Image (cartoon, rainbow, N blue to C red; front, side, top):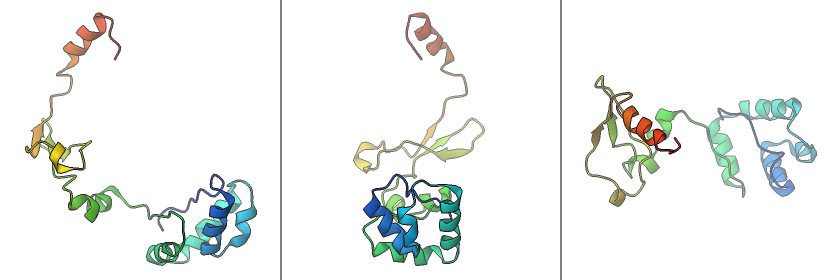
Length: 138
């Protein structure tokens, strides 16, 4: 797994036992806190196997464990691509496009227009200043 932190301290003791047993370090279930020695031990243990191994291992347990991925990999996940979550984009003043977020997951709540032009930086400043002068809060 690319991220070695495990939130053992905040989890109920039964969940801590499940996680530490799956990791092969059951003695850590009884340790209070998440000091460097606990994090280092878990990190060392996780580094010894592949992410696929750990995901498979934890799939057999009743505990939530996920692999931390970069944004490109997350956006390519079938949960997002099948729903077209990142299909909408915003075109910046320089012509570059970026994903339009937040985007409703359900297509029925989205506009049909796939690319929208973003306002220039500061384009709405005057309206915000007027609002603030009238006693509004930003």
